[in-house]
Image (spheres, rainbow, N blue to C red):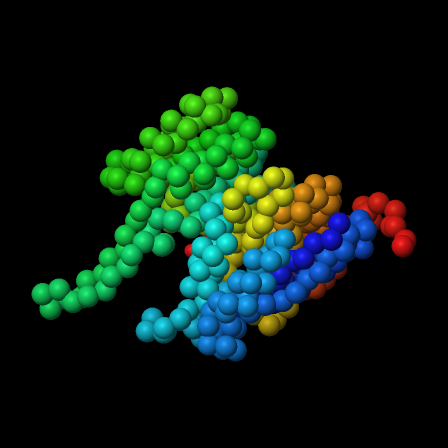
Length: 370
Ligand code: IPM
Ligand code: MG
């Protein structure tokens, strides 16, 4: 097939890990006889530096017209001034909104070879296989913000809003995912305090009863969910929650896997017929402290490429092959320093990427010649 993929390398380690993701995409194209056009665009701090805008219009256009977008990471101390009129993160939020990428999917599983990297005891990690489905274009992230002086004192506010329609569409995504898995859905809210959460809870109950009676639904308050993620992580299958709770819980859940450097994410838009447009990115940040040293773990980005192949291009065999190649590389302990045992051997970003490509090409079907 032919597909166009826009790369947004971004800031910090973003360009280093996206380079490995691009290698893997080209290896899939070569090994399975596809034709992928990769094109790069500016977003984040690098775009502020180059054109004074964290999300230039032509970047939005290159993303809109692509089949999928692969993003590295944005942000860094250079752009952290709270008075700045633009920030790298604004570019990312505006892009999610512009492409209506309301469903953020963050799978977490534990690879036996790196179980020791998690701060949790190994017996708690047995069987951990969960997905956080985070609402991505609503809630407090996008509500009206104010900053004013009232009675001589500074005051700020962020409004949190959700509509029935926004809740229904994200819960449907979560239910569809749960159907292909263990059929369990945990909806996380703060219904004992927040009105948006009470709406969330009633809409979710009603929708699941009406459209997904086969799904086993539980409601858990966000504080309890944070605790249970550490106490009994293997019990969870699919979690669905609003934007900010999902941001927080997905970073917490990432520690189950041992390293943020292993976790991919997909941000999807409106359900289309079959394949749909999406933005794929590692869940880690731009890690300015290790940028430029060639030691960033590229696996979260490479696993994001697997999600891209599966969800946006519908290439299921290729997606599975990329995931198997990553497993093989982890099993062989070809890992960057974040996953290496203390004092143990570690590899560079590019060496890990090359190892994935080699494992992938071994698994590729006989190459077609034109
Ligand atoms: C994430 C990040 C972003 C978010 C930041 C960079 C705006 O933390 O994707 O989880 O809060 O959504
Ligand atoms: Mg986050």
